[in-house]
Length: 379
Image 1 (spheres, one colour):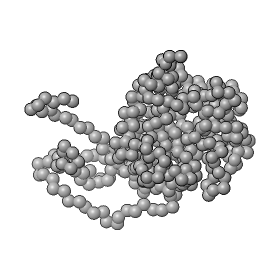
Image 2: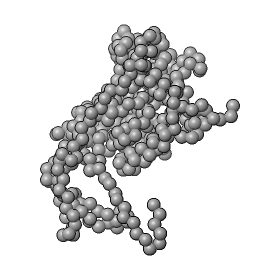
Image 3: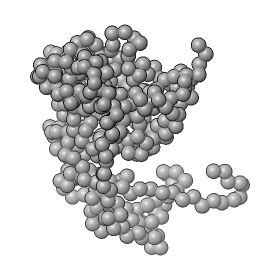
Image 4: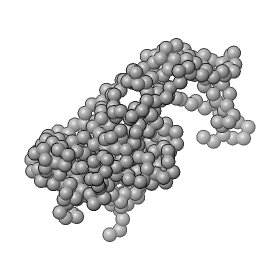
């Protein structure tokens, strides 16, 4: 917006109060707590004045959610007597009475239609399906999946130029430790702000047919040391109010084509193997319709002599994470062994589990491959 010297312009700023909701463990819901919320405006955060008051007479439930992520091993601190903060509000400031029903949100997600993809995968052998769910692993390079070949993607028009389908970004976390190895690429702002920035990136890239983003690392990735087996202890309130909020905004508002899970565990379960995180939260609550893949779990880098077991291909597929990256012969054998209950850790994988995972990969490959324009670079 350009304003001439001496001119003025009225700007309308809209905010969804549901974005300010926080998790209430007792209600297993996100809520807006009762009380007066002062709206301040100004030219910067250092120069604001009270402009209005939002009056919520009773606590409002915004969304009912699943009770997930297990026991973090501690209880969140909550002051016995919250301290009231006195704010001088002009007597003539508008006072807006808010009814709880105004901020109520119902999640009415529908499952993705996999019928066409399932028709194909049901005609394939167990061996064929095992290759589909291992992103880059195949007997020959030309038989890799369209997802695996997209690993070196760039952005937008450059993706068109190179014929890439998925960009492995944007990424975000909170930078709790300067030792996290991926801080250099993480959006680490306020979760709502980070979500809006990443949402803009997603819209821009996916405005190009056949091109998509891969939002990562989902979630709680906090350190580089022992990164394949580190265990993040996170309460559900901290998870939903901070760590997952950015992912939630991007998924609900922009539907990225893919999400990449993180290496670490959360409360004793690998994020890549957490059905609560992938199916209950990501798909059931947020309505995610895209592809879920792991980070690059290279078999030779994993260890079995640590407190927590390593992430495995069969357990990952079982949890609703349909693309185990990058994949190797040991991973393929683990998937096949899972069909008879003999996978590492005793994981039992049904043919239906494998078909569903493969169908999700096939659906995304078709979505990206059929829509994409031919690469424009000179041969």
